[in-house]
Image (cartoon, rainbow, N blue to C red):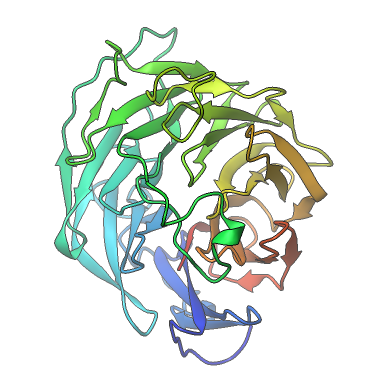
Length: 394
């Protein structure tokens, strides 16, 4: 790891890592030119004797589109805190973070997702879902919605969630020639939330009120819609161009691919722009090589590639997306190694850098990305504090 702690947003990226060992957030800067890492806040050499700094253990983490605030699940059970919360952190100009606002108590939070406009924070809570409107200073206000659940054989277990975009990717470092859509395109006016249910092997579809964030039934339906997956789905990612949804199927080592019925897609097989999902031909797609236990999954910021973390094989698998059908083709090589027990994945908005937190390895795997092909090149692992879980990048 390089020495020094300077951070310059014009020449450096910023990596946030939640350490469950010490109960804190570490920040690292990295050169956008060569990826060289420098520790900024809570360097690993200084945190070995600390515990429960945040009065809990940070888990899932996201950064808002402006890069101004980060939000993290803080699990309080391992500390003396009264319960689990969602906490907000201001990202300072020097790369440090400071708590912002008052943490919000939530029951059994599992995963976070944010809409592309940075207006709403969605929370998976096992048998339930919550939505929070994001206000000034990263304040969170709980949103109530009205929807009707479909009868299911089992009570749902929501483990991951993702929303359709209302803002398309902008013109970034790589230019729009690498994106399937751009800021100049007309973005969708409707928004949908998809939640993975690992008990019923299904994805639930909700409509999202773009003004308030409230969840409701999809258009024309008297209840939320359910779409079948393969066995024990674990992760979900939505294409940033509002075309496709991808779900990792952890028991069968496959990825299910769906077309989203929106105005972006031609009428067949979508007579209505209602957000419904249609499984694409040849889905689900098998992971190859030694990949095992697919979990966290991500689509790159320009909608060209899918990456899925093998939680049992310590790997990440890459696929190319067919822009016409949403079908997947494995990259070469199809599998790249991570550290021990990978738990989360984040891709920088310029599509040049990927990071994966390795819970039992006290490392974050860093990869450079070739935007034209999606190919990954592993950089030296980043040494972190014990038990890193959530990871986010700006």
